[in-house]
Image (tube, rainbow, N blue to C red):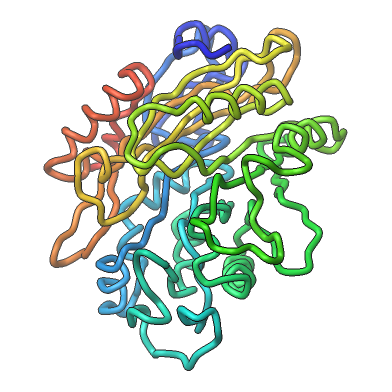
Length: 387
């Protein structure tokens, strides 16, 4: 069953992997006992895993990028240190990045710009210039979740070209596959001596057809998501499985019953963590107790990493950092959670960009919002990043 997040209790479970991060040292982290929460910022030290929220490039963000010689890069430059602070960093790219594919899902002439409202477009059917792939890689991203409700906004060819653009930039992907591929849906990455499988899925493709079965659904699949997790967790070459579901209700501050059911099933099947996307606002971090007694952190939603949605809860996000270790029974766990609040701002010089919250004048209200949602004990101020 689900339980409210008890950070002090969870600290006891992850004692073996908790760390104090020391700013400025080449080897930044050393084991401590008992664990200490929220000491230093991951952006100054290191973490095993980092998860950020939705990369949702609305029209104004694409327009800003089209007017600059360095394109999308300035939008992510202020957050690069925070995204680069982990061995593996994961984001959700909310929409295709399909080169020269227009709204009829056919190839058209290169418009010669990063945004022309037709080939490269905003809501309701997104398509981003494929240069976003290299920008994400340069900002410290390693794995991209491509299963989401906008995955088919440029049809099957859009999925193919998006995956090609991301692979060309050196990014791994999970949740969608090219036409004709039998899988796999997951990607495996080495993380601090462990081989971790990341598996993404989506609740919907906004009613758009998926004739080649390129997007993995979170619900109603055969095999089901829990069955896929169980199969991956049983493999001797995989140390742990992390589920990345695109789920929930947009703009809701609390997870739905359907989210809770899938998360519990994933934990029972062997997932070591579940990190969700789609609501576009932060939702709490909980710990589920799996059938075998393991404690599994679940971040229902980290909110937007970047968008042009301007309400406090929409422009505020969080980067979640986790470390890998063993529990008292020797089982691999993802623990020592900490969160770095982020905030999106727009300026004449920078355009729309995402920052560590305290790097901007109004960031304190975003910090307070993240503390309200997640609790203050695991929220880091990121002052070293704001300086």
